[in-house]
Image 1: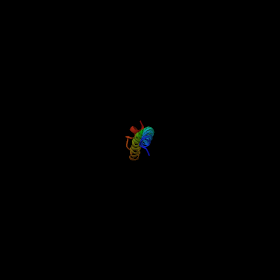
Image 2 (image 1 turned 60 degrees about the vertical axis):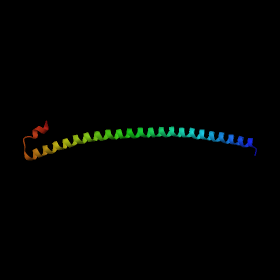
Image 3 (image 1 turned 135 degrees about the vertical axis):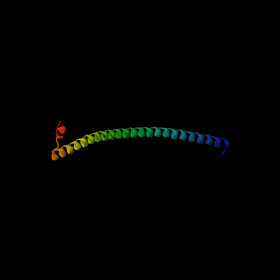
Length: 93
C-alpha cells in the first residue's frame, strides 16, 4: 500500500474511533440521566412510604397510650368496686 493510502486509512480509522467514542459518551450520559431519575423516584417513594409508616406508628402509639390509660382506669375502677372503696365515684366523672 502506498503511503498516502495508509494515511487515508489511518484518518478514516481515527474519525470512526472518534465517532464511536462520541456515541458511547452520549449513550453513557443518557443512561446516567435515566439512572438518576430512577433513583430519585425510588428515593422519593421510599421516603413517602417511611413517612406514612411513621405517621401510622405515631397514631397507633397514641391510641395504645389512650387504650392503656383507659384500661388502667377500668382496672382501678373494678378494684375499687370489688373492695367497696368510695373512690369509685371519681371514676364515673
